[in-house]
Image (tube, rainbow, N blue to C red; front, side, top):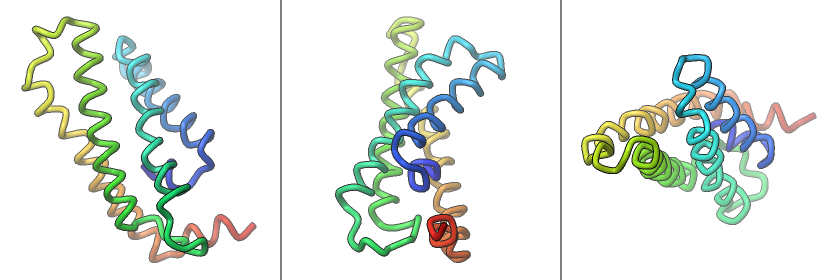
Length: 134
């Protein structure tokens, strides 16, 4: 979520998707690398949309805004549905049950909480103003 808020769109998509896919490969879950590549790329789109179309002030250098919190929820929904579909395609939809969806809330939920915590700390340090000053 932070990469999507801090990096230009193509770099955010690349960082999120390739980083997630590499993590799957390196952790021994290579079967999930392609779905992760796609899902993580889609995860950045709500943030890119919000930064482009919903930003209230041009000089607002905060990471954590109401819009970004809403987009973290939208991104979480993309994650849950994406992995449910991927599991259904890979292993059959009989295996991909509602339990899978319920377990699917853990990763995006923790990601959203971490995003808000770290983003708030970075906002207090005026991080976005510092990196875009160059």
